[in-house]
Image (cartoon, rainbow, N blue to C red; front, side):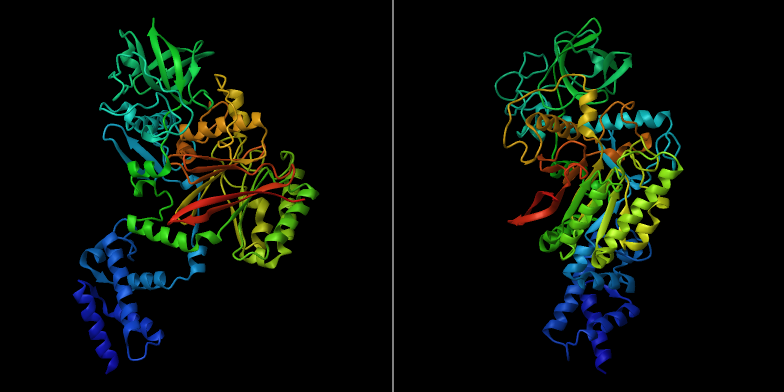
Length: 601
């Protein structure tokens, strides 16, 4: 009997690889191999069999993909016993059978802001943990409204994440090293980048000499009784009306900013974390120089934190899985693009007309792009019951426009990110999606539509994209404590967009601030309220691969430490939008993004 002999042969091959295959799994495997029409079994038959076995072994080694609730970071009893179950075999066969289109369709993953895992750093143990249960430390788990302890933990974690990043930099390591900058804006470990001034004062904390210069971060509590210039890292807080203090993990000290000079670009605001050089006199820290914390690019941060501790999408169980995802990205990733619009006023006939033109232009693309619409979705805020009905009608009108293109309605993907004036709970970040009440018709007519939170995080293969609708530049300009630095224009700094020279400088300051702070809203809570328990959902640490901000200023694009920062500009003003390809070019197995600013006449 050929079937029996094949069963024995396959079982023997599995045993030679240290695997025990269950009888039902063996039957399923025989069924799969028979469908491939290999005749009497030959070279192709064996290649398929060994490919399946290799994938099974790989999954067992990595402890992933086992049925019965083993979870992605633990294989359960089946893994320990090296038993091949029908569930495991089915997952392996499905994975090996995926086509290029399957890989592309599965490449996109959306993350609900309110379910974002929280990266936690323990300064005592000096280790990171990714906490899936995002309840706050105040015991009010499951609620977005925190307690007093949650507010304390929010600021403490912001500070500790920056502090651990700083303490790993060469300039703060007590060993012989080459000269580097005093304050941030450069790359991690003093590797350059940014426009910073090298500082080597005659501070007691310097090692001295032209080589091996380093500085020590002095805690606030250690200023008492000490003289001379010191370096401190802390958060600027307003304890009394009009009086600002520097606060760290040990205490507070009043600041005198009257003679402070900024050595880095960026805005300095209340609640921002800064590196300060100054001298304490009579209980007041007289600031000489101030700058942003040193930054780490995404790859350096992931190395320090650990791959699994940065996997907020719960999609990469091991380094081998990540490498496999990168292979798929290189093979299929260039097909994908995101068409991003901001301030899409659905109550404007001219806007609706341009949307229809845009969809007509993209309706023949294969695959279709992912359309990201960011608010505000009306030119005026809602007020009263009549406006509620009007809002429903606007989304119904949009559904009718999309339905004119059946392929777009059936196969296209749409993401809607709410703006500050859109319906729902407004005024506090992060904010939830537009309520279903307003969007039921659109959901019924458009097959793949996601009404996302603000901010919205998207995974595209191994790339992480953050979409954020906020008037970032204007807010930071209004609340800065010190006038930002002015510099001559450098054509290499801002490589895209239509902003004026003055606007470009403000844009650069805002972009640099959010990345240096590792946070989307490093502003006073009075200007930008935040749910204390969900502050981690606004973090930018590690950096994403791209940050797309729907700002009310003109279009811009800048690459900061290998992260793309993009503003599509208001669609309602000039009908501008941006086309973003996360993988626009591949050279020597390295990917490069592509940004194209577009306009509809």
